[in-house]
Length: 408
Figure 1 (cartoon, rainbow, N blue to C red):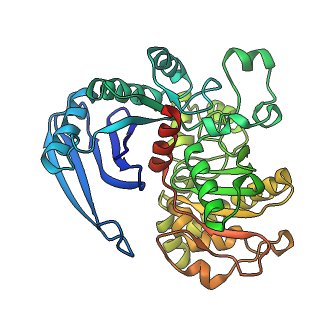
Figure 2: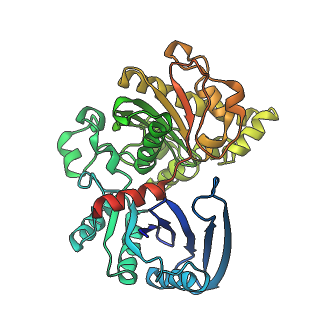
């Protein structure tokens, strides 16, 4: 059995999955949270699969939760090991051959999955200046995981790596060039693991070679981004130097006129920290409606709430603007895929984002779009020149795949 442990670590929590890569099934998954607080929580789920050879693999799961003090990530990893020992599956019988780590920011240095060495750790720490909320926690998780699993290779998979193929014209900001170089200011893009997974999954589903396709992927969750992909290569993406640029999100504003910050500083006397909080934590859907969840916005819109209706319209307007831009950048498109929480579940968002785009070869099927399902499904008409899909993302599986790629 070729098992891979995938770790997604933050400053006060980490998620994990143990995957059997012979059939890409999840054996266990969990969350260790409230690290550093008086009482931490470990939630561990074990998955039971039907025997191989059955026509439809059945799955059952068993979840347990424990509370205990978790002082730091090292103690957290011990809590995870205890959960495996008590609740299974056995890490002796299912010992991982590698550990894959999600790292948000790889800057311009990392463009592929990378085996972690002390030098790589130093680079991840150095890049914390570009991702102060994410990279430090990832590094803590890496250090703790290397203590717990010291005999196997550890691999860093970077959210920014997929977008390292952007051309200079796509990633360069029109500011003073020397200042940009000094402070590493450029578009990096994020959600790369999801965009890569979804674009390949769409190609596989359609029985097409990814290298032959022009694709637009919409990753619409609480954080949201879009990517133009030509032949499996990212050529443009909506997030930029940080995840704040681009689409309207749950709590992030997305694109705004930067001069608004000067005005708010001068007239409202808002500090830099207050402006940072405004645009990242209290804007987007939350700022317009008081609710950050698209489900609440859709409920309000259906009830005739004007603020919810406007927020929905603003959200969709931004989606259509980027879709149009990427149609131009790609010179047309073969496949458009929606993924993540909003993309996979909000039929009205998908419908309005692609409404009246028959001129671009996009013909939606209203009935298909309204249907709910758990797997990949087509929501365009049979004769639509452009295929529109809903593709559930699986970033953990993509990290595991890239981890095996790195150690092979």
